[in-house]
Image (cartoon, rainbow over the protein chains, first blue to last red):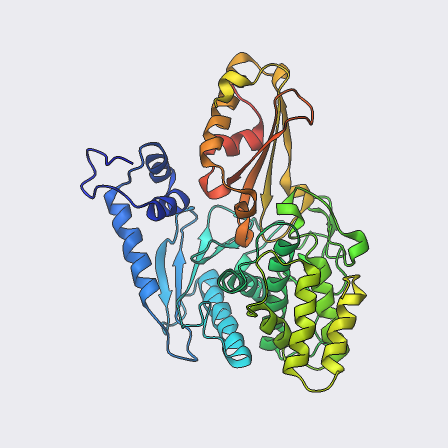
Length: 347
Length: 108
């Protein structure tokens, strides 16, 4: 790697270069890719942001939130518009992201005694108004990012607390089990995010398993779309059937497992199977999902025995083991085992 | 390897945008480009983009991580399913020309 003549800062380390390629605008990307150098001002800003958020820690039981506005560009993180303790801005997406990250933090702290994504009180960083009519939300390894949707198929992604929590949970999975994002471990990675996403929404609304609708992204679909959400955990494959979206392809049983090279080997497709296993377990136990089923799933996610290439059966066996470890008697263990058997996973 | 020198008239390229918080079949909008239907100039442009995609690609199990979108490119040098080359290009790295190719097909 050679320093550019006009770059007073010299050689850029690879991790920073990758960050610029991924987060910069077209010019920065071109620059980073073609000459392996970058604009010094942008570099300074990125380093400032990284150092600042990486170094800060919230107090135990208190989230540390930073919301940025990408201004409908694809530059990250964007302009900081609200940080912890500041009052509402009046921008719906900003205030929804702030509130939803707070609700997600509260769930993990109050129910599972987990202090933010890194369990060390690290900052929760979210960017809203990403791209133009951008129809997605994601976790990029550093922060959460939310598009506005196009208003026709998808509404703003900050509307759905379960989706915000889903993205934050990706950060936790990345730090704990590190489940490989392909085939069955990838589908488990996705399912874990749905499980925590749905529990955060249920906890926020204080819903029992019978009261909950077990839908992911109920508030996201536009009014003209024939669907109830992005996924159904109770009946995978029934969330939508619409000319603009196609038909929900999720199976809810191993006999319908989808072999595909698309979607990282079907990570958002086959996640329907472990999703339904969690649903069946929670319904069998009754009450609030987070009290028993949720604790078993979380204990499994942070279990050192969970390999990053775990398949459904590996994960299932660990959930049964953790159920026995966490709860006296056989009720929880049997409910977990029956949940997996109900979706055809051999345990 | 340069695709500008290795892909002939029989080649086909399939391009789809995948990933995202949900897999929705209709939104992938796969596009297939048959080289024998393209002008020489169009072919050159597509090959140049494929060369760039080679530099921007990442492993398949990293492309969509955390619900990030990516472009999945299948290159079929002899026009059928033998010796298919697959490239995954994260959306955040994708050049505008690749997005335009996916949206509108080859241009002169």
